[in-house]
Each structure stands twice: as structure tokens, then as C-alpha cells.
Amino acid sequence: MSVLDSKRSGRALLIGAVLAAALLAGGCASTVDSRFTAYHAWPADAAQRSFRFLPPPQRAASLEQAAHEALARPELQRAGFTESPQGRFGVTLLFTEAHEVRRVLEPATVSPWFGWGGWSGSWSGWGIGAVIPFGWPPVRDESWFRRTLKLEIDDLSVRPPRRVYEVTAVSEDLGADPAVVLPVMLRQVLQDFPGVSAQPRRASTPLP
Image (cartoon, rainbow, N blue to C red; front, side, top):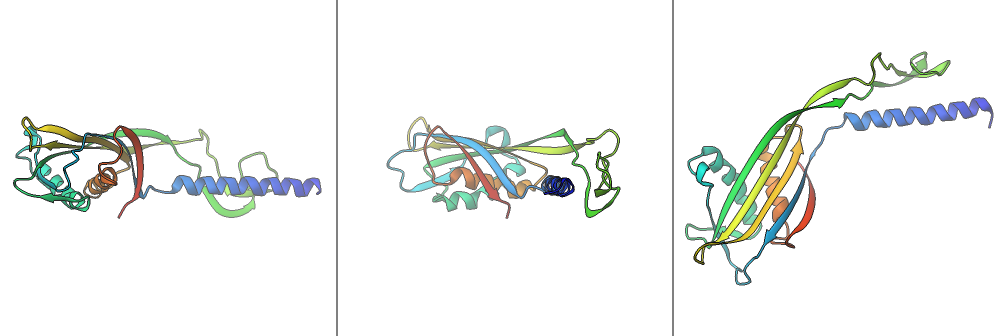
């Protein structure tokens, strides 16, 4: 291979790498990615999972809490729970979100055309249609949302009631609809319920 061919091959590889990086950086998340650990002492005689919601005392009259419970109801039913005014298990759900602004590097803008003089690096002659401005890499601010879902289940058939299951799940995103995120996070933690106690888990689910 001649020196010229070698240079062209190296340039082609670099061009491909730059384009691939730009495409990956420009993509947006389409999944709910959560991490959580469930702890439980699930009773062996609980074949029938009847339940009733027990909202946190500070949210007992909250319309937002009622909306969250309405979103959670189908997922609890999917996991084998049946709602009843006299349900054996008291289910307490708490869904919160926090917002923060993060400063991130802005990927270089890369055009998918090739021509003479477009590359700002040290190549002479043939180049890629990309311009790296003074002060590269630029930065931009992103609004991130941290969602926290807590689920606690108490056995109300004993006195005093006994905690038999609890889990806290955390997920972060760039502003997905919380009405979509909440059911997905609950579905993730209830998969294979009650599961293995005290085992850290991660789950990734496509947004519906």
C-alpha cells in the first residue's frame, strides 16, 4: 500500500468514527432505566394478594396522590394483586421527582458531506465537512429529572401491622412524562414479585 493510500485509509477511518460519535451523541433516550433493591419477608400463606391503598398521612387528601394511585392500580393488578376495601395488605406508594440542570459537552456538528477544505485539523486537501469552532468543545445546559418511587406493603391481618415488602427505585431522564414513567417503574420493581430480597437490580424498559 502506498503512503497516499495509507493516509486515505486512515482519514476514512477517522471520518467514520467522527460521524458515528455525532450520531450517538445526537440520539435521545427512549427507555426508562431504573435501579432498585427490594427487601421483603413475604408471608407464605399470602396466595391471595388482596390490598388497599394507604396513602402517606401528609398526602391523604392529595389529588396528586390519588392520580398516582390510579396509575399504579393496573400494575398492581398485573402483578396478581386484587383491590378490596378490606384487603389484607396495605399499599403505600410515594412518587417524587427532583429537577437539576447539568452542564454537558456539546458534540461537534458534523455534516455528512465531504469536500475540499472543510476539516479544521491538520489535513491538507481532502477533508470532511465539519468545522470545530474556537473554544471547542462547547457546553450546554440540560434539564434532568430524577424520579424516585417508593413502595411499602404492610400485612394488616396481624396486630400491630407488619412490614412485609419495601422497595425504592430511582430513574433519571431528560423530561419524560411522569404519567408514563411511574407505571413503567412500578412494573419493573414488581417483575417476578416478590423476587429475591436485598438483591440490587437494574431494569431498562422501552417507553410505551
